[in-house]
Amino acid sequence: MIKIPILFPETKEDDKQLPSYKMQILLYLIYKKKYEAADIFAASITKSKTFPHTAMFAAMIEKGYMICKPIITTSKDIAITKKASDLLKSAEKTKIAQTKIEINVEISEWIEEYREIFTAKPGKKGLKGECIRKMTVFFEEHPEFADKDLVMKAAKLYITNLKGEYTYMRQADYFIKKKDTENDRITSDLWVFCEMIISANIPHQGSPNVIHSNSSGRQILE
Image 1 (tube, one colour):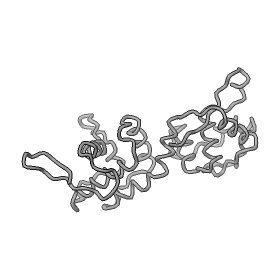
Image 2 (cartoon, one colour; image 1 turned 120 degrees about the horizontal axis):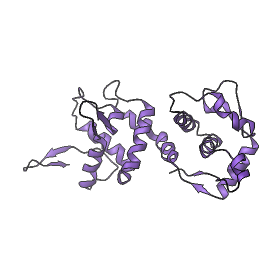
Image 3 (cartoon, helix red, strand yellow; image 1 turned 120 degrees about the vertical axis):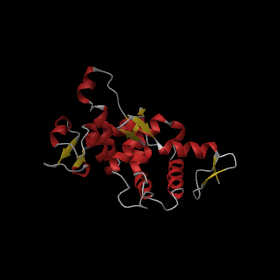
Image 4 (cartoon, helix red, strand yellow; image 1 turned 90 degrees about the horizontal axis):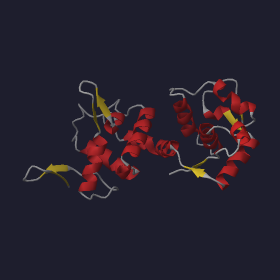
């Protein structure tokens, strides 16, 4: 898990000068050149599917923490100043605050590998942003399953047990969580398959297993 350093204001003057914690997160991601994660986080601040407007960063530009191009379409259009760099280095030496974005950053680095598992049928990879968002929530709600290898194993197990019948195959983001609009019920196939693997004490790594029914009708993993 990636830890993001945050400096919290201790005086009224600090409160005026320090960037907000969200801006500190964004600055840090750009500072570490994690541009994809920075883009996702910046969009999440305004709940937008595109990078926020330049006006959003006016205060940071005015305070001398960043320099932006006239039109920003990606975090690569933002340059971190020496003032911002010194601030982040100071934060690294003092307080480390773990925030929601840590999970987003970590997940964003391997989510494409997860989505590729669902390419057995065209159009089932799901939106990348939705996969990251839902996986982040899943990890928060089910910390016992917050493990990349377990998630990959569960997804591969699901695909393997379709046995080539992909007509009703779940989309990658819906596999994590899906809300049935008719009965307002939320289901998670990912939770089901993670639970199967944990209950059967199957190693998280290695080839996917196959679900069989034993003589009593109970589903087992082999």
